[in-house]
Length: 227
Image (cartoon, one colour):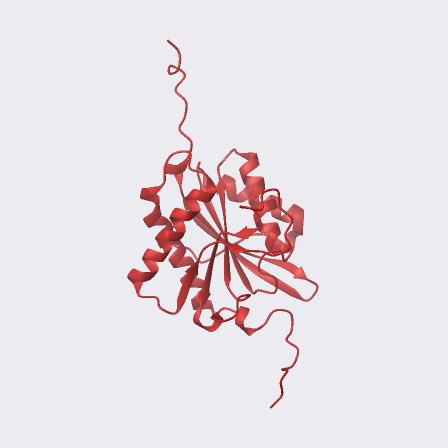
């Protein structure tokens, strides 16, 4: 028996996902966010919000009896330069399907970012600190699919997605434009696009935009705070 198998192409079969598995991730994430929404608070930041969402996804998974996948917490990425090594450089949520068990490099990455209409900083970060980590291969190198989860704090969502699409095309070209994806009743919008991670490999991203208006910072009443 040969001790070494043949060289694999960029990525490997454990990284691939069937269409129904991709749709399962979409459904599970949307259901989890819907369940988590009651637990978020005004002004909640991205990390605590994601912890609430991740726990809700696990509860939904158990309720649905999905024993062929597991939901994991932050997945540390080796050798990634960060400003805050305690938080940055880690994928927010990862899932593993049964065919991926046993291979630590095989998982479904979900990167979470807050968004708001009119908030240039948050919306730009969705691309520079989210999408770009997939495009560069810092996240999910060689994988066939990755997911971006956008917590929408202020509407309209169309303004947000149009701006993100423009930023993506400026950064990665017209071929990376957002395309309408499979819709979900618990999502505000779903899009997909393809990004070149290497000369011979593309990764597809599914972008899920969800209602997290309850986590938006409270507006300051100008009549308060002065006597």
